[in-house]
Image (cartoon, rainbow, N blue to C red; front, side, top):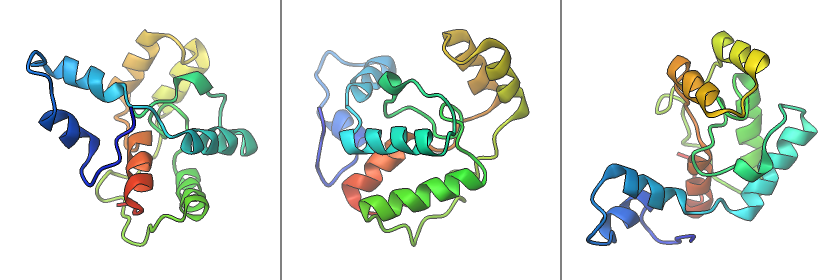
Length: 151
């Protein structure tokens, strides 16, 4: 379900919840049901392939996928990624600043975990999120597509 409205996805689900939904995990589940825009998904996949960022699981790209933790795009690469994203989708990124999110720098510990154990099992992803807090997710890109601005 893709929602195109003048409010965010979170506001939509909080305002239109069924009466039986009361816990945060159920709200989280409803938010995860929203699909990533196909053009955005293809852009991410093609970008990672063309710049050989990392091997990504194309089927598991969702709104919670982190660009820095899950896809391995950080430091100068994320600036290049956002620039190409803004050019491709004609997004206004003039007001964008990393002060809101924190600049994604990556983590040596997470890189070691990925190298030794891979990044497909759930316990490795959980441990990586404890070591390094993800900064920027696909949800922010989807919101930029919806509003036309990257804020």
